[in-house]
Image (tube, rainbow, N blue to C red):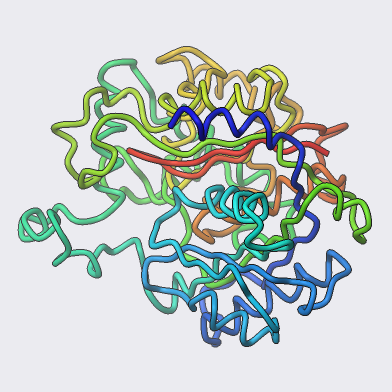
Length: 392
């Protein structure tokens, strides 16, 4: 572990994201997941000013709900994908696959790598219902009692936090309302209808304390980025966005069933608390240096845990931090400027990387954060996750 952390210093700014691409986000794409992956990846390659023949690596992550990397490489007519990897992982891997592309290039396995996530998350394999997991591992023992979905698991953590720190429904609502304000300005967003606090409070309860607007969207779509060396990046079509650093991991028992809320040592802390030191050290910066943050928001509450875990505010202070307007576009830490997974769409968190790159390029239109130089992206909500620091 120590050598890996040490290498992060050596890799700072040596690699860059040079292309980004997406599909439309919808409730029913009417297409195969492979077709979505090919479209987003082709768009990212073109955005970089490259051709498929220039790509020699491809990497993705999935829950057995997507197209294999090698199949997407074939569809793109990539002649020789010497590095083709699929991570069996959830939303915690959105930054991990970019960092793995960096590692592959550093190791000489590839020169230019496409990273993508594609899913028919509404019309196909739906993560929200939990049906697909009921016979897997420890879940087989909890599912017969109705303990099976991600909203149920996260709601338990949130309820505990409410009791300990006095979090109010309105403070959770501030997250949903703020992110919707951003989505209204985003032509890619699935939810662009303005939302008031009254709208939030009137939305139907799903699992206490979560209402409908506390839970992310289910989405069909795909995102992709192209990663290469900083040296090669200088000759690309777009201004490079440099990878300053990153981290992946979690706390004790991170490999346990995430529905096991009994053995997790401290429910006020998720993975972000345990990777924070490595993250900031790898990039050589502090939380105060971040201009815009794209924080994994499968639920409103997950943003609060990560704000505290990564050091933007103290334990138990995130509700007030948000209520004071600090995560708004004109606040001290603009968060999820595209509307996030709650309002733009849920491409398993990888759309956060797209938004971070657009912000640093100055291509976010009316939702652009002025003079954004450094961006944070995070991925994960509970026991393990990843984060990355990017700069223009």
